[in-house]
Length: 77
Image (cartoon, rainbow, N blue to C red; front, side, top):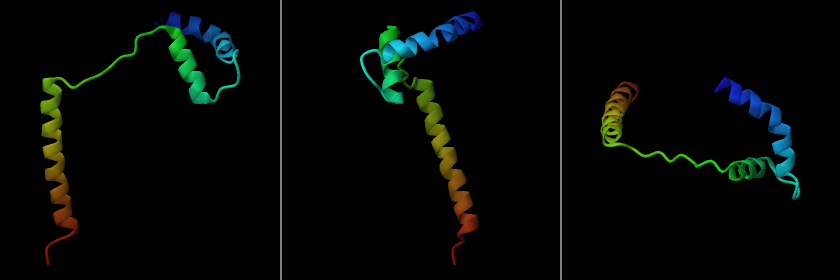
């Protein structure tokens, strides 16, 4: 992986110049042009059932924590 990164680094100037060949682009457009030209498949992420359970548990724990902090900072009068 490290060797691949070094090879790519040596060609970044050429890739950048090629992305600007058809006219000026702002930074985000350059990034998109390079991404679209690379032919790489984009990764898509989704929650697994275990991830959904974890998220539900984390949300419940956050609500408990937030309630405890609120009770300390804003006691009932």
